[in-house]
Length: 110
Length: 115
Image 1 (cartoon, chains in turn red, yellow):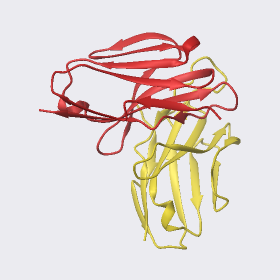
Image 2: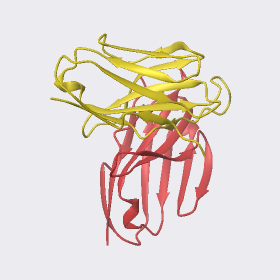
Image 3: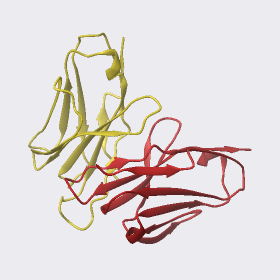
Image 4: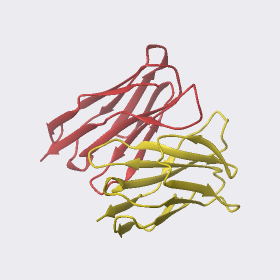
């Protein structure tokens, strides 16, 4: 099946710093989503981005489908940005299930 | 905006007991998915339903079964519970399957603890 790899696995930053999270996937996909899992376990939709670039406030994402990777940018980090960021893809082969990467755990210190 | 509703939010069971988790998708979403997230793990796909028919199946144990009802809500039934079933169980829903837009939206999850 498709492999989804996220890097780095852990990231510790000071408040106000910028960061880039990467997601590589091994095969063609129909769909790619970024999620933020907060300390209470909720999976919050950040971006639905099978290709192209999107921005939402301090967050932006870019997916280059032909090269099988996506990037999530977080600028001017706040302590509330802490949590685990997941990339999930919907493979072309098979039904519409999402295959998740193992996540990047982001810690923002005040 | 309406979100995916899951109940109960927390559930504590003994080994070998049964559990039923419920999911109410976003209105007008006809596809429902179930995922299991173990401690420190990423969510793993279990099963999905489109228009009340099973559409895909992942690594779901034979002890688990699920269905989608006429009002599109779904239930995940888990029998002969084991300690390893302790996890966060998510339900997600998405708009019409097969369309260009298929974003999945997740509920808050049911945290199942098996003692």
